[in-house]
Length: 114
Image (cartoon, rainbow, N blue to C red; front, side, top):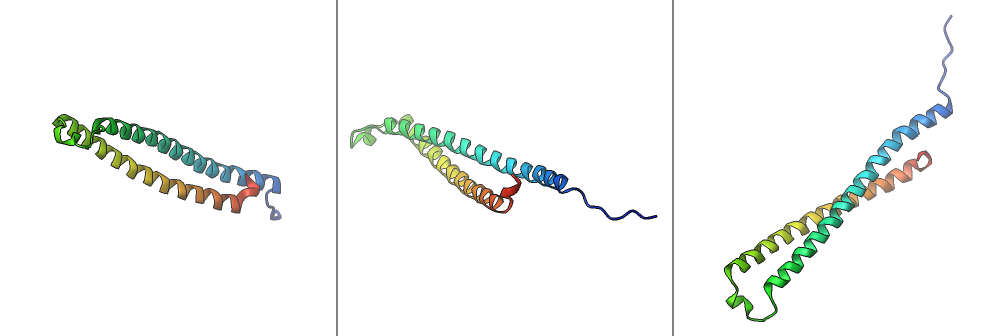
């Protein structure tokens, strides 16, 4: 004799869905936190480099005429590092925007299961 078709209980389905979607939500949140931390730390380092470059440049309007070549090289290195840092910050901001959009979409479609 054949058994009748049965589906799982609604409670078990809900638990399975919550576990499946909860893991996705946690991964997205973890990525958001990671990007924010990296961006904040990098922003602090770029700002510190900018401050150091400002000190190296000096305050006299014609200081560049008598600046030591080592100082000039150091300033160029600060500029290179600041540019690279700013580019990375822009990339992190782009990633953050995408991840936050994912969070919004996820929330819109699966808020009842979180």
